Image (cartoon, rainbow, N blue to C red):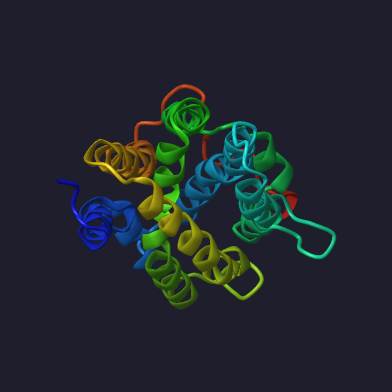
Length: 249
């Protein structure tokens, strides 16, 4: 017997409670004001690789969708990140954050200095969405269920603890508080509607676990490279690289 819709939703939400990356020690350090300027910069550089890959992930998903209605509903996710004539988009907002912490946005956009493990994890997510079932691909996006709390905590923590933080530099997170709810409401409803067997529910839950692993592993790499034991792997960003001229002077 397939568990009820409510029981399945509770199962998905429990995955977030147990595994979402708001529990990672790096976020505790960041939000509490414990990061050095270079640790913040390393986070901005590496997180950019994830941000800039999200529209490619969504385009890969849409290329497989035959239902025009689903494509229409999904299209706004790409526009939210890439921007439109009237919306600068999340990628541009992230680069404004990069500039606020003293990084050259062109350097960040080049993705030079991104940790190998970050690339491996993010590329695996794009590949997952390209190759797995549509149900699994949508289910993997449901980490957005848990994102509002981390965005609110981040906005409050950065504003309290870092001089670079203001409405302009944190606009990415502020906008996601408005954009994400519509995405997650649709995605959750779609998964609940289509995961109509025990096998499909198990696959959707596993997809969400996979996505939490993608997010967690990025922070593991960041913490190991720039906090403890602070061993930067070959190809990783070295403090002092990619700074704005005023920072390098």
